[in-house]
Length: 152
Image (cartoon, rainbow, N blue to C red; front, side, top):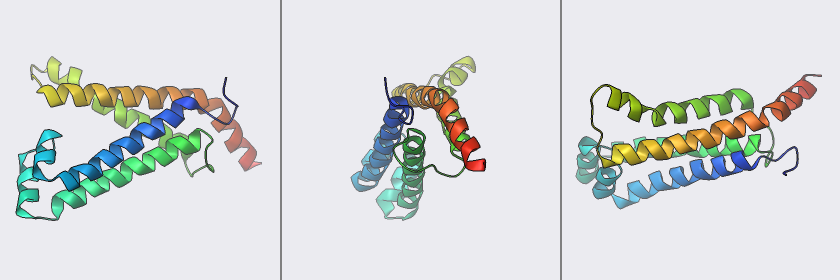
C-alpha cells in the first residue's frame, strides 16, 4: 500500500503523459516521415518537408500540454506541491484522454473503418485515460482533504 500522499496510478499517468510529450518532440526531429507514421496527416508532413515552422510549432504546443498534464498527475500523486485547480485539471485531463480513446467505437458505429494507426492510437490513449481516471478517483479523498485544509 502506498502512503496517503502518493498515488502510483497518477505516478504512472504522469510518466505516460511525459512519454507522449517526448514522442511528440521526437516527431519534430524525425521529420516528414515521422509525421506520416504517427498520423499527423499528409498536410503536416508536406509542410514539414517544405521547411514550414507550423508543424514544429503545433507539435511543440502539444508536447508542452502533455508535459503540463504529466506535472498535474505528479502533483496529484503527491510528488510535488499542489497545483492550482488540481482536481479540476485531473478530471479534465482524464476526460480528454478517455474521449479521444473512445473515438474508435464512435467511428465504428458510424461505419468508418479506421486505419491501423487509428486503432492503435485510440487503444493507447484509452489506456492513458483509464490510468488517469483511476488515479484521479483514488486520489479524490486526499485531494478534497487538502483543499479543505487549505481553505481553513
